[in-house]
Image (cartoon, rainbow, N blue to C red; front, side, top):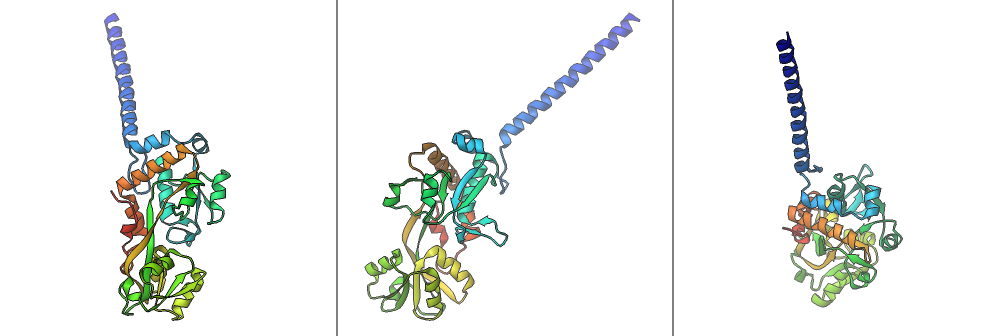
Length: 300
């Protein structure tokens, strides 16, 4: 009787130990998988150790808030705009969402704050936003006001003409009527390189496009981003020749905010290594005429 009871007790403890070991091993397996799996983004890719380091080094205020707060354009397709559903979209929006994914494991951990050329730097200075991702060109004057990240877009100036116009290169603009925006880099470029082009200088983009469609000039010489968007809807026009007068574009961070600048630069470098900018360009700015947008982005 005692032997039978002893056998039952031994069996009971063996069963308990086996169950305990199973739980421990199961738990270890889950922890190991979690440590190696990271966070999957919208593209299905897994965040790597660099992403984990970025999350660890988030500025404390941003970490506590649980999201980025970023100044963006809402009227500048394809870089930053509102789509047909009212959601933020565009190349710069995709860059910011990728940063949020790296930092928080969620591309939607962002508050987009609409800004324009006039208020974007004051918003930054008054802490309304963490940084600016709003078609911000790098200039010496702005360097006195804020710190720039590494550049992540490099737009230039292109020539737009009616199809079969006979104009195939910038040099063909000699002696032709060319619409430019008054005071633009395009106007300056023609002054220096094609001085015989007859420049029709117009103040606003809307008036310039209207003048082109009214046939007031042979060509328009202007920003590559805007012109690529224009030829999408105005299919009787095309972009010809090379892109020139490149102007680097970057993210603007508060002067002296080393932690935020590091977060931004580390994120941009990871995107470059992953060739993520290429996927954004393919989505938002496909090749148009002679314009190759792949020239405008950092690549591995």
